[in-house]
Length: 398
Image (tube, rainbow, N blue to C red; front, side):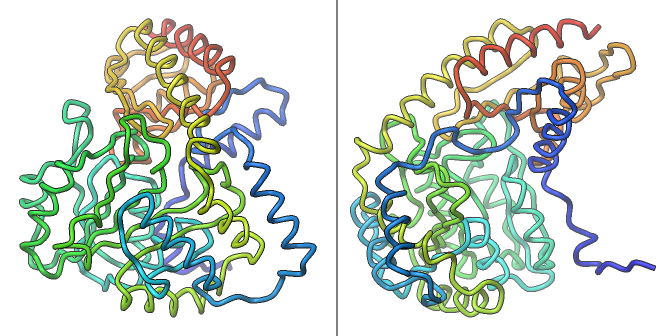
């Protein structure tokens, strides 16, 4: 008889990965599926980064490094934070991990005991809740809406804090909504947080470079709470390096040391060749290597929003970062076509997969099953066809 631990049984499979798998299965069966389910740039890693990685292989840079990353890499990350974000860190406050997901897991597992409360504004990235389950923390979900641009307010934050609150997990730019917090909005939240000395912040800034409003604002810029901010970043999104698996954490030294200890028992350091590639990424000029991709995403966003306006019942905000549109779809609840009855966004997502051959992710994955996440990290041609299929499939629902 098979027996799995309670630990693994209580976590859910990532719905983004599940939908991507379902798409691949249908494609393998010969069905033409447009998959917009994964948060993955469709651009290639810059050649200059690939060349450095190839040289590292030829130079036999193939041995274990320090668990947190080799020191020159961590120094380069410190320089990046100083140059791009105005943040000062030392290399012993930096931990390089196998993707930002591991960076987040390290921090949660090092800070949270069973019963500790963690505030998570919804919509939230799928893995926040599941990582928290592994740590046996207690989630306190704070709902936001399209009318507030999916941002938590200081009043909502203050109301959610109790003597058991240990952590808040927040992302800007946000996955799945694309919302971006301004400096003033972050400052207002920081003014609440500073009143609660045991409250820490995981600030997930992995989409930093895919930002349509000018400059990125980091939570750690406010000196009065910097010693309680764990900044998460990496190379997956801004440098089109999802498969390289390179994550970054910048945190107070005592937290970084704890995460180094934790990581040392799970994976040790991330791939040495990836580290060399990350080192080069930290040095690249934004205007030359990153801005063209960011500009392409902005053009695609505007294309998608324009085409969505032609579809009845889709309510959207104007996302200012990342590469997602997150429409509310309650207009279609209660409608049906053939065997499909739409009661929630999950029903609608599977209907669009079956009828429109279009793979999206339902809002249930992110905390509220009245939305769907539409990734525009694909070609304009694919996006036009995807919106055409979506419009035609939704028109059949009565």
